[in-house]
Image (cartoon, helix red, strand yellow):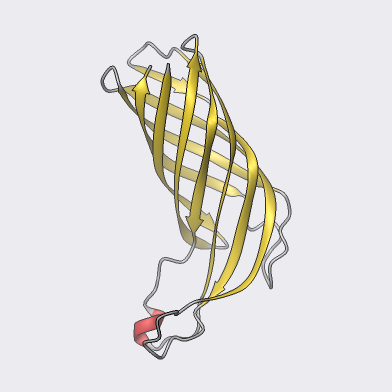
Length: 172
């Protein structure tokens, strides 16, 4: 079989709430192993009120990562089962500054610094078979990254837990 999926999630990055979204596609072998590709994007500062309320300049850490997914599936034919996807890949992160918070210019952010990193993200998904072609899963994962070099940012700032929901559509 095969599936395409999208996910929505939450994480803490640099002490701020972060929104994480992603997508992946995979082929399923013997109903017990899925192999595919996918990626995630994130932004850690969802408070854009600085632009309108004349607050001090603010920083946002944004980026993404993607690569190969390997997903063992335990009890895939049961209505509720587990899967253990692991992402192996590469990513990029940028430190963004709201440099023009007091005017109505078209470009309110400025890229201050960026870096590339390696990532491994193992996860556990509690998956529910909703129909023959649709599954949904609650997931917990941990993002391990190589050290990054961004201006006045901890080199392991991207490492951390993610919580999310994944929606899979395909032939299972």
